[in-house]
Amino acid sequence: MILNVDLASEVPIYQQLRDQIVEAIAEGELTEGSSLPATRTLAADFGINFHTVNKAYDLLRQQGLIRLNRKTGAVVTPVVAHPPFPAEWTARARTLLAEAVARGLPADEVLKSCQSILDSFKTTQPEDMP
Image (cartoon, rainbow, N blue to C red):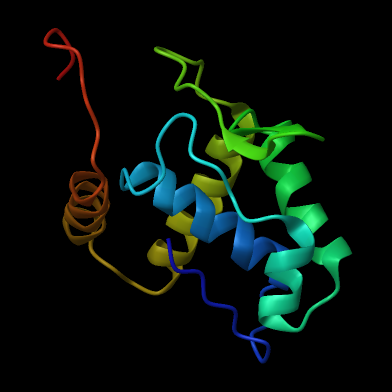
């Protein structure tokens, strides 16, 4: 897994790290049991404070995507079969979709783009799922 940090971005570094790890999990690049780099190692690689990496890892832990252990470090957790769609996702999606509407994007183009993004991730859907 290759992580990139844009120090000039308006997006906080911890959020950039968190988002890239989530995408790596969704794309199948990181699978259950995959180890993430140690916080101090990753911080040194980017020349950032290790607390920044800790914050990204803690967010991922809170969201159930990794587990943290003193011996094994940060490890990707098993995928939950059918988790409920979190209310916070609806709020985030609503804001992104509102921005698309405010910019005058046609609904069919937005839906096509969303479907394309979903299709780009390696997912294993049960046979009965659409």
